[in-house]
Image 1: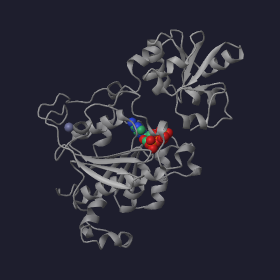
Image 2 (image 1 turned 180 degrees about the vertical axis):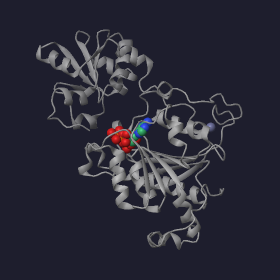
Image 3 (image 1 turned 135 degrees about the vertical axis):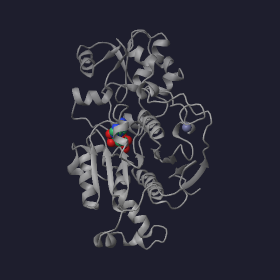
Image 4 (image 1 turned 60 degrees about the vertical axis):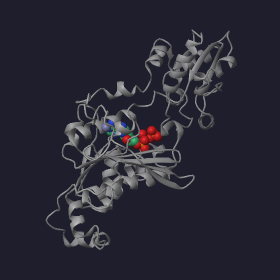
Length: 392
Ligand SMILES: Nc1ncnc2c1ncn2[C@@H]1O[C@H](COP(=O)(O)OP(=O)(O)OP(=O)(O)O)[C@@H](O)[C@H]1O
Ligand SMILES: [Zn+2]
C-alpha cells in the first residue's frame, strides 16, 4: 500500500539546507520534493525517554521542520544507559529541555516546541492539534490508549513502538487507512501482568532499533514514499536477530474506529488501564506502612517476616536488610503460602508498591489477615531510611 504525502512541500530549501541534506536529496525517492515536505512537517514525539531519544535525534537530523516534545519528567542517572539524547550533565534537568538542547546541536534549523507537562485527556487535543503525525515513545498503557483515541478522533497517524528486554514491536495506526491500536489490543493487560521496562529491564540499544523504525515510518508518511507500516505489526527479536511483520486487520467491531463506535470521546485512561487492580487497592487500604514505619518495627524488635516480592535480579541489585525473596508470581499461583509462617505478621514490599499490593490481595484472600505492605517499596526505603543504597 502506498499513501499520498501527508505534508505539502515548503517553497524552497536554503543553500545551507541543500548542503546539509545532500545525501537525502540525491536519493530519487526523497529528492528535493521529499526534503521540502519534511521541512514543512510538524511531528510531536510523546516522551523523551528510551524510544523518544533516538526518534527525536533522527527526526531532527532528517530535517523535520518542527518537532514537538512532551515529557513531564527529569533525567535520572538510570536513563543514560539508553536515553542517548541526554548526557551526564543533564541529570535532574527536565527531559524536554535537555532533549531540545541536544536537537539544537544536531540541527539548528529545526524549530522545537516544548510541552513540559503530562499528556492527559484535558490537554491532548490542544497539544496534538498543530501536528501532522504523532510518534509515541511512552512506556505505559494509559498513555498509549489516550494517544490512540485522540489520534483516531483527530484523524492523525500514530506511529507506535514498544520495547521490553530484547523484544520490540512497531506499527502505524491510522484509522482512515487501517487499524487503530484498539483493533490490535482491544483491552489493556490486567494490572500487574505485563512488567514495565522499569520492572523487567530493557537492552539499551533496542531503543535505537525500534525508535529508528518509528522515524523511518514517520518520514515515509510525511514525504509520501514507500510502503507504510499501516495494517502491519513489525516484531523484532534482538536475541534471535529476526524481524518479521504480521498483518493486522481493522476490526469492524472496534469500539473506536469500527462500524458502530461506542467510544466517541476521551475516557478515563488511568481507570481503564488500572495501574493497580481494584482488589489490590482495597487490600492495601489500611494495610500499608511507610518505609520509616518498617524501620521503626525493626528497631522495636517486632517479630515479623519481611518478604520481597520482586524478581531475583532486582533483589541482587538492592535489598532491605532481613528480607527474604518470594516473587509475586508465587503469590498469584499460591505456591508462596506454604513457605510462610502462620504465627508471624507478614510484611511485603516490592520496588515501589504496585506489585506488593497485588501480592497482598492474594495473601489476604489466603487468610493472612494482618499482613501489610510497604508503600513506596525499596525505593522508598532508600529515600527515607538509607540513601547510601543504590536505586534502579
Ligand atoms: N502521559 C505522559 N505524558 C508525557 N510524558 C510521558 C507520559 N507517559 C510517559 N511519559 C514519558 O515517556 C518516557 C518513557 O520513556 P522510558 O520508559 O524509556 O523512560 P523512563 O520512564 O524514564 O524509564 P523507567 O521507567 O525505566 O525509569 C519518560 O520520559 C516519561 O516521562
Ligand atoms: Zn480500531
